[in-house]
Image (cartoon, rainbow, N blue to C red; front, side):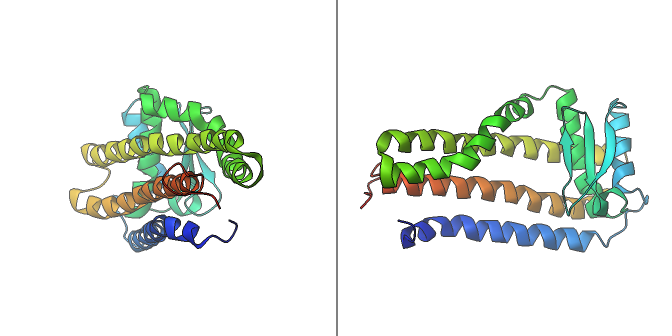
Length: 230
């Protein structure tokens, strides 16, 4: 069970997609981080302009540590930008920064999927730390009842990841629209921004696919998808 080759066969498509998404994201970001925007706005300045034009003057913009650690925190109404985004005037930095500003706009406009994702965070955290282990213990020692508890826990991770997809896609769509509407970048420059954000969106798809394949593997091992645990 611990060294079941079938596990790696199940996970191979998700792993391949994850590696491809990661490669595309880093490649696009590295390429367009060297392309300066015509207006010369930094990521922080672009996000600030977009937020201000949307009337969100109360959203703070701060620096965060780590490569592409950019995020929006609804609880504190703060937008954290990594160093490579905060102070850079590249197309890549503006794309990432305005995408995060898109989340702040979602919050202000009461975008329902964002609210749902925030509500799912505690259960998703529990599921990600315990779901896999409980399913494994259920299969090996404790029986079907414990296994199904593990399935329920791990399923919360998948639900969270599926809800995350429209949240991320919508934030990207808002950013793509508003950077042009507010003259933050030109239509030609947005081609590079699109490549960065589209590649980043693929990482969320890859994560969801990997989790679904993991769940399918365990269900197969339990005999619920035609397989059997022997």
